[in-house]
Amino acid sequence: MGNSKTLKDVQAEVDAYIGQFKEGYFSPLALLARLTEELGELAREVNHYYGEKPKKATEKERTIEEELGDMLFVLICFANSLHIDLEEAHNLVMNKFQIRDKDRWTRIEE
Image (tube, rainbow, N blue to C red; front, side):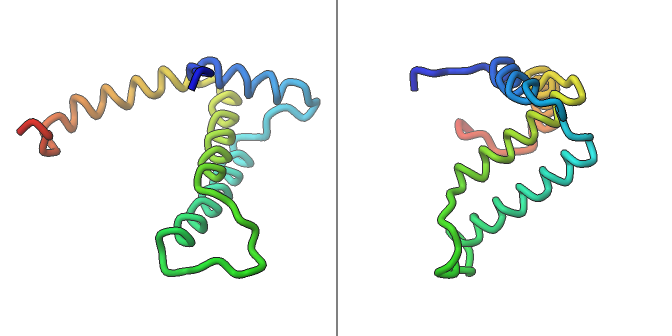
């Protein structure tokens, strides 16, 4: 994969896309609703592939990858609308896990 992007790159790309429209970003509440909607679509796909609920013959073929991409786009919109740097947010959560949960799980080398 020769087209590597950082989180900053991805956030800037989404910001440039949204910035071309007068409406701009949706409100945080609307973005949360959109994220919830996309999560439901992801859950439906996971259930079709790994669960007990097969697709109806009339249902469009979608992929888990596509649904994760939709969720990522909305999540980036959410972060951008609130001026949150996702790289910084990621670093905060990883630091929390490395400190709080450092002895919680059995490491492979043990």
